[in-house]
Length: 164
Image 1: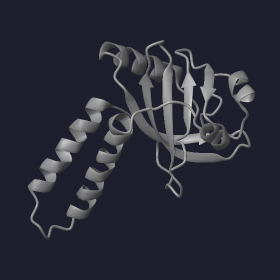
Image 2 (image 1 turned 60 degrees about the vertical axis):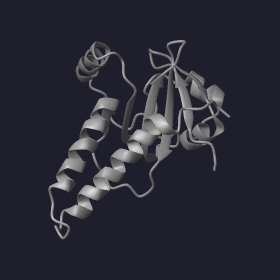
Image 3 (image 1 turned 45 degrees about the horizontal axis):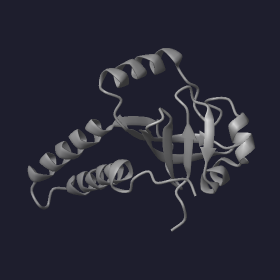
Image 4 (image 1 turned 90 degrees about the horizontal axis):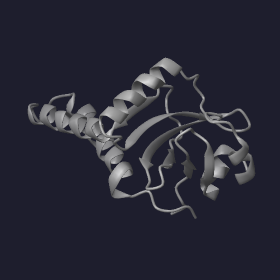
């Protein structure tokens, strides 16, 4: 299995390292990545007030690992939908693990914490238990449960590994 695209960033968003899979996904060399300003690969404009509010809430909750999905903008201007997991490492930098998702319909970006994933997963399982075996919404709930399981695995089971 090829290496998962992995990027290392500092707390201020400076790119410090990446594996070849990430560089290929972004369409840059390591030197170009390191020279890039924070947020260069974001396909959606940032809202500084919303980011500050989220950061305050994240810090108040103990800086848990994060996951989500959204679009990134490659160096050539094209976009790609990715799922991501972000974990802080001992030196205060962050490991960002990317999983490209081909043919993803246009949806808004989403960001979640570990607690969010587990709470949503449990809620979906409770909804499933309450349904009859032939209920038409079972398929949708089963798909939701699989998505939460995958998010959990990205954040925890597979680990963040090393650059390679």
